[in-house]
Amino acid sequence: MNYQKKDNHYMIDTQQLAQEHDRQIIEASFADFETVCTLSEEEMKQEFGKYGWGE
Image (cartoon, rainbow, N blue to C red; front, side, top):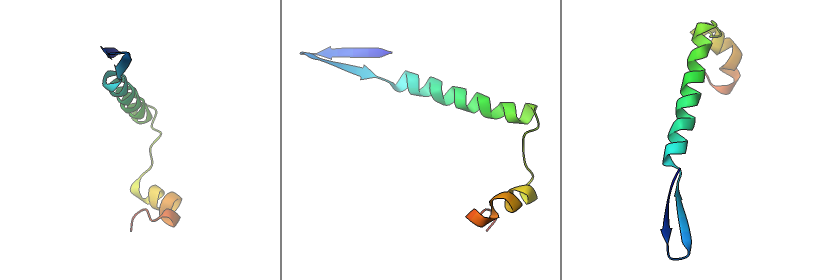
């Protein structure tokens, strides 16, 4: 984590932390494909059609 001191204030740069967090989320999403925890388009329509999926 980077920071800058300006007068009596510290300014924290959280961009690097946010990027690492996003990277972890993306990597975790690929695990679904490895464990075959995915749905077909038809299954998505059946499961989430009431929310507008497939319209």
